[in-house]
Length: 121
Figure 1 (cartoon, rainbow, N blue to C red):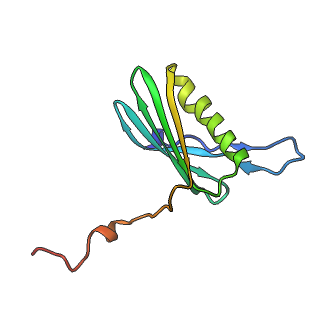
Figure 2 (cartoon, helix red, strand yellow):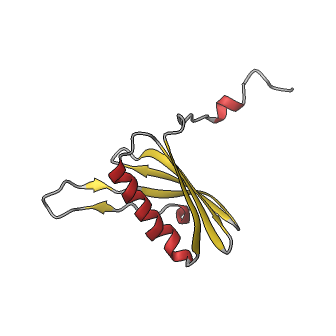
Figure 3 (cartoon, rainbow, N blue to C red):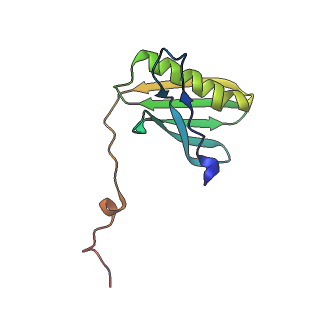
């Protein structure tokens, strides 16, 4: 399980800037040809988006992020994705699609799928 979480890095700046948590990637799913990451950021480890990588002889990437992410953070995020996740693959990138704020994120828990009254005894 530990291999799915990349270490959290704290950017310490140059003593004039406040300490901030950089965006981090948590691998949710890995198959022979793809990976899916949740992207968290900030002291509260807030979910700001997801990244899907489809890998063959080339890489196709799809980034979906919340609308609150500003342009500066988006550029930082894309740079981190290229440096930390794509560069080690040593493959050409065919496409890198970014979808920002296309919909609300709705999280469903297990109890949303299984109603306790629906027991088939």
